[in-house]
Image (cartoon, rainbow, N blue to C red; front, side, top):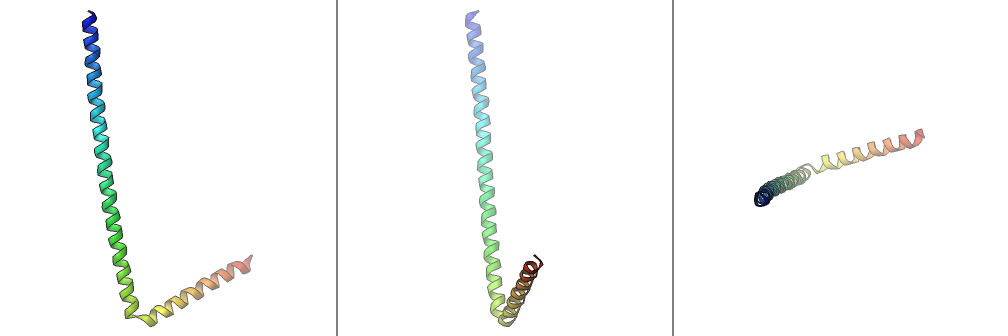
Amino acid sequence: MTQTVVERTAQHIAESVQQASRATSAVADAIEDGVGVVRRAAKQGGDVAEEFLNDTTQRIQRHPVLTVATTFAVGFAAGALIGWMIKRR
């Protein structure tokens, strides 16, 4: 009888170890998949930012006067808004 209790306990321990091993493997796979997704997203984000920068550079080179006028208008509007906010206080 003692032998059967010990054998059953050993069997339960072996099953628990197998389940823990499978769970750990599943978690490791999930983390690895997550890292892959993050890497792809970062690469795509970098590609989009680079493309946006290239497009902006080309647009500035094609329309320099419009760029200067727009920059002046935005700066003037921001200055007026800040001045108005300070004046209200």
